[in-house]
Image 1 (cartoon, rainbow, N blue to C red):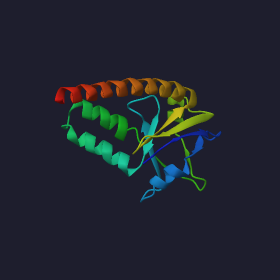
Image 2: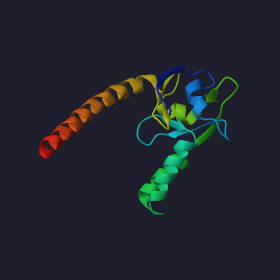
Image 3: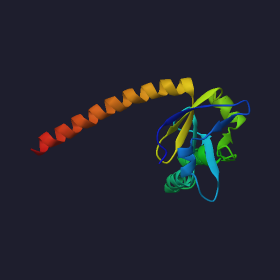
Image 4: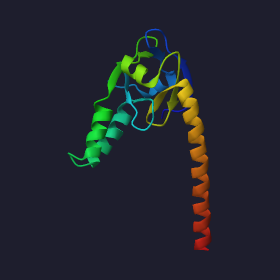
Length: 154
């Protein structure tokens, strides 16, 4: 699983060092990573075979011609860029993705299980704060539902 959060500097050639912990999870027939514009946030999403399999499974659940299926296929499959690691464990971010998401100077790589995201550092700070608030509210609601279910069962 991709876990933790790392801040990395982007060099003048748009290269970033992918954390060793992430690279270890991507070993296989292709020594690299696949990235594409995230469909859930303003960032780049990346991963390996597990992520590709997850999206493929999701796409195959939808009937051919379904507009949601087509949108996911275009966004995820059509937006993918395959990048190999260099000898220093770096990838070169596509210029178009750097421009689209403001990836320059410093970025944040955040592990999300079978995938990771690459964020503009300032955008991630704002996103993380909003997500913490949502997580707190969601957890409080879940606990209230669990208490109500226990009381109803008693």
